[in-house]
Image (cartoon, rainbow, N blue to C red):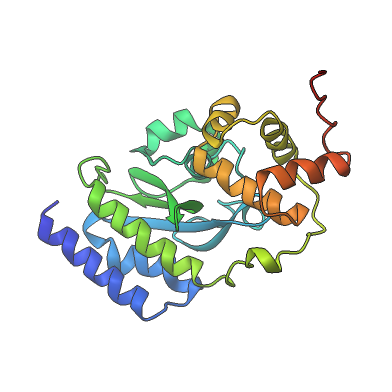
Length: 246
């Protein structure tokens, strides 16, 4: 792929994003206008919602029913896009190789010879992921700067559809219960472990743990790790930690 082709792709994507595209047609624009040099066949963009699901916001080129009900995925699902988001790393390969790695996508009759799945970051946090099916190899490592720029433009565009996050002083406790994973994270927080230590212990990306911790703060109506642990102990979510005897 020539450098001029990549620059043309970015220029077209920037033009589309500047015009605040309709969410429903955004994936279509990625396939038919932006990524033509890669012979794109399908694209999908999902955002991690407040309940820990990857909620697909825009899709194009996937067969009917390919992305299941909703379509929403748990980040623990054995599908390549949730895996890329959960781990915070890009995944690429031939479609055949990825079907071998993720058998759940085998029956979906996906189009294209190659697949690229990349997490989307916004203000330092993983907010979702993007899946692209294409006939030309994406060569993510070789074209890392290009694909990072594409992901940044897509994440900024998609995140602008959502309301601004609640400021800490205005945060109120949500009625949604904590998930099993968030309770486990609270247990690690109670032990004084850092985000990196929790991520390694639970086999998740550090950004995913950070995103979960913010949802814990929202659910408990707190603004710090210490307050979260104290609130969880008062609510019976965590057993109070024994204090060392003098």
